[in-house]
Length: 270
Ligand SMILES: [Zn+2]
Ligand SMILES: [Zn+2]
Image (cartoon, rainbow, N blue to C red):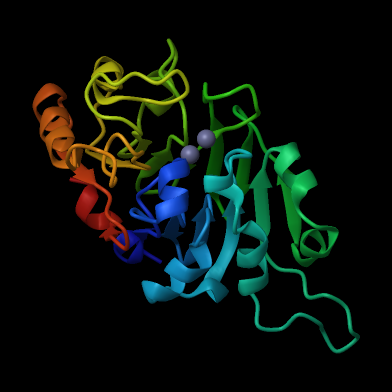
């Protein structure tokens, strides 16, 4: 299958506790569809509602990623595992096994035995790990977030590479792990210089984005927190952050995620 069909669907563009509560921006995570495979990354609260609302099909999900043990990333994982099959038992009354979960061990421990038994495979995953799935290399990237374990995830396909940063701050080797990617999906919680010791704000990430070599074709920002756009913020800062990133980096295309947004990979590569 060519990458013409490959797609990213935002089942939410919000992150953090205000959006969890208000759903002002949804928190359902991201669908990444590649080579006819559907992956669900970070199914947070409401993932099951959003996947239906945006006319996507939970039955198609075969890879699940939970990047860390924060509720806006793992809340609906058990629901999504259940929703990924319409048959629970085979003719011998054995649970039908389907899907692979990539998650840190503490997330795996939290998932009920019943739901674990539904999966074909569970991969305890961390930064630096690689896994080959049908010829596609899946790589855990490093995060500096909280004390808990976590990872970002990078997919190396035949025609392109894409990375999902997950929640992180910047650190020395941050740009290195994105060398050679075409598309970066960046969790950008806060605008301008509103610093947070666990997350990114725009001004602090810009110099690091400029060190990614070669420059990615596309940057997509998402996982916006309450300072960025919420009933609490003075205004929606997202458009001004897109403009700033466009002006102050070499990246050709900067896109802000919106709830329900669907992007064809093919349109992001040139
Ligand atoms: Zn988060
Ligand atoms: Zn987090």
